Image 1 (cartoon, rainbow, N blue to C red):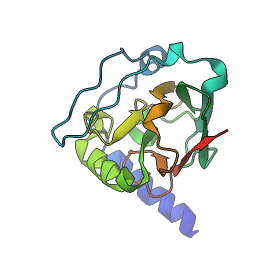
Image 2 (cartoon, rainbow, N blue to C red; image 1 turned 135 degrees about the vertical axis):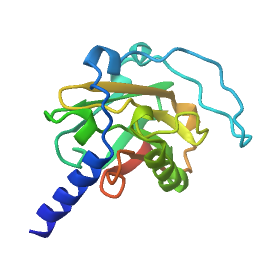
Image 3 (tube, rainbow, N blue to C red; image 1 turned 45 degrees about the horizontal axis):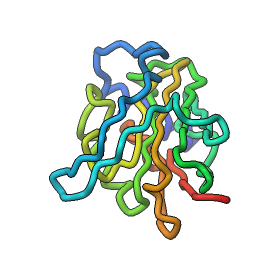
Length: 186
């Protein structure tokens, strides 16, 4: 019963934050990112270089699924050390629209995750609940709804083998339960 009430509360919060914007079709949500050189942000940190997800080999890819609940189907994304670039595809297998049960994947250092998620909630629905120019963000997908998918890609050299990294959703109230670890593996 408590879980049911928590879901109703989360849905009410999500609905109160809804925009009138229609969900993007799959083709737009999964459009490849343009390749741009790294740029220095206001904080002095270097922003991540964009990688075209379509250019990443299949053996350097991982699929994460989510649906009409606040839950990913995994709590870890294993990134192969042997890959120069790595792609993560998010598939929303549910039917609810992006405005009421949208999901994304954002990757940051573990220490930056909470701040990026909080900042994203404040950014609002028109930005996909994400301040995309934040240099702490290694990579992110678009916010998607039921039946959609989106991909992100990044250079694995951005991950320090001794560092700790998280992936999470920035839709309001999702961060507390929709997160996991990004690990470099052999």
